[in-house]
Length: 461
Image (cartoon, rainbow, N blue to C red; front, side):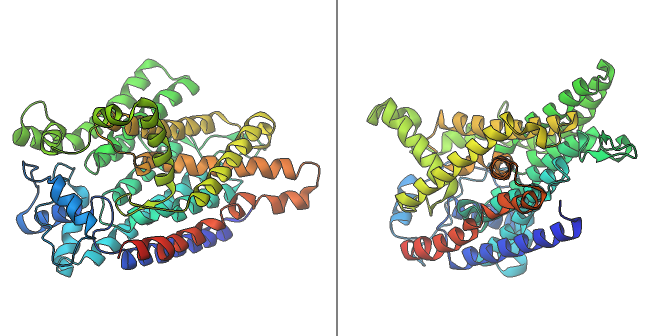
């Protein structure tokens, strides 16, 4: 067990290192060479110059122009003003970005650095979530924070103009709030017994709903994970704590009421602009993006099994790093090495769950928190699959609503290996092996820097 002061100092090192690497990505990634960056930038520009909020309309998507610009590396004098297909997105990121836009004269670098700064929220949230889930094993929290901080594709996205940065921060804060609402961190009372976090110190269900409402105003892909993890937190706590149905109804009403109050601000606006029942602007978006490759078209062209293989391979690769507009992969050997690492992680997690489960704290409130984590991961998977029912979007970043749970899985997997290696070796070795989940990720910052200067910069000039 490490002291809080040491853990916070090491978390600070991770955050500073992330910010430094993120700044390098923001500076050295060529302009517009990140997925959808021109469209997000133009949405900010419209808010800054014309007020909130843009309206997606025919002409905002020109697939031929976009492909020409990508093929030409986005020439410096190219007119990008017509690329506006993100105008249907909720407004919060663009409102914040508009202030930076006006203060800096529309500097692309300043907006990228704003996104990098927002990305620290997800890194810190990963640490706090795991620290509260396993308060006597802060190395797990540090490992989770490091995975979120140094995942190359995540850094690349956070260093671009993209509402994923604010989305990750908001969802991370919501996960932490749900974990705390469930009764974590578990404490040892004066009798030496485990007990849940005191009720007066836990957040109210209204806080869960309010944060879900903020997620509704931030990014469309946050809707499903926000609803699922709040529902899991409330329902699981109701069952574990054996509350009555009145308690369940009251907590649900507070959470749902706050979430709907925030979301309604945006949905009513959309109805007035796009008409009923297009609450989210998606019907208008789908009508506008004529020419975007559809799933049915690709499956017909190449066959269902090659489609599934391409789908799975590209999602895996781009979760870890496939840069630019998905046109710059890393070497195949790198992905094989990452696959081996993840398989070892899963093996360690399986050992932890079957052979060493009694070595970690096991309290009902921790079970609720793990359910919240699982819900976020499931929501990310469902969202990715659902999106690809219509459009071909083999982008691993659509799984990032589940990034903190994946980071938790990595930390726990290597803790399983630590328990196996240290079995019967004594307390001294156990203390050293507690650092294995952190040490196992030592390659990730190096990979992030290497990917930038070895692959992104040379191939996206």
